Length: 70
Image 1 (cartoon, rainbow, N blue to C red):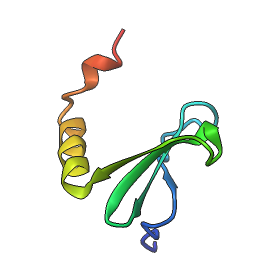
Image 2 (cartoon, rainbow, N blue to C red; image 1 turned 30 degrees about the horizontal axis):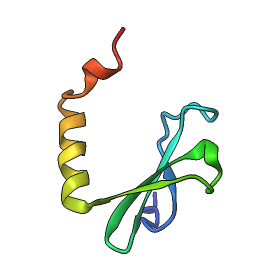
Image 3 (cartoon, one colour; image 1 turned 180 degrees about the vertical axis):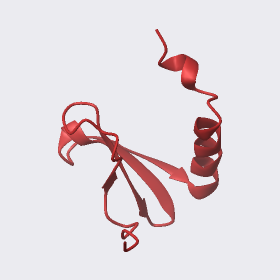
Image 4 (cartoon, rainbow, N blue to C red; image 1 turned 120 degrees about the vertical axis):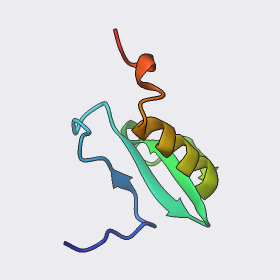
């Protein structure tokens, strides 16, 4: 399996293919995040690699799970 191009928008495989999708890419040394529903016309959030790494570490450790539990 080849490694995806980080400069292209990437959608998580767990996305439902409809309204619950976000995309990410690496652009100008920043990780950008956008809502897929906006079809490229909505706002984009940019994070340094260090910021995104800290968030990803927290997500992997379940630090934000309480935000989505009922």
